Length: 80
Image 1 (cartoon, rainbow, N blue to C red):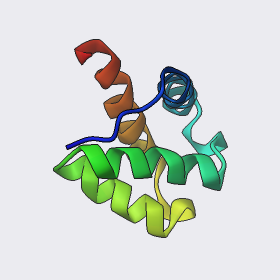
Image 2 (cartoon, rainbow, N blue to C red):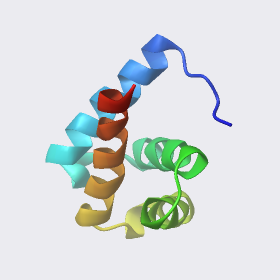
Image 3 (tube, rainbow, N blue to C red):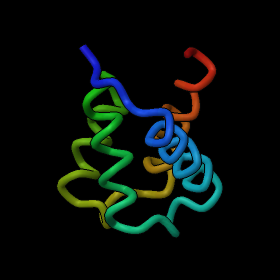
Image 4 (cartoon, rainbow, N blue to C red):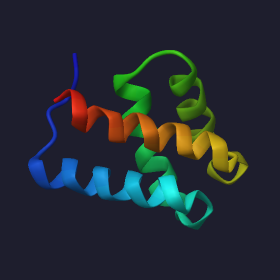
């Protein structure tokens, strides 16, 4: 059961994920939380664990963990 996102919200998440994939540590605290909230709701496994960590402590997430969240969101576009 996933919440439906508007096209503009989906596009915003995709752009944010693309930027985060290249420059993960330049994302703001709010942007990290936004990405984490999306991944935490719709995915399972290691990405969900990273999302939970990011929601509670956005500054404590490593660049590789941020890239994993972003990569997961970017992968959604290919599946849809």
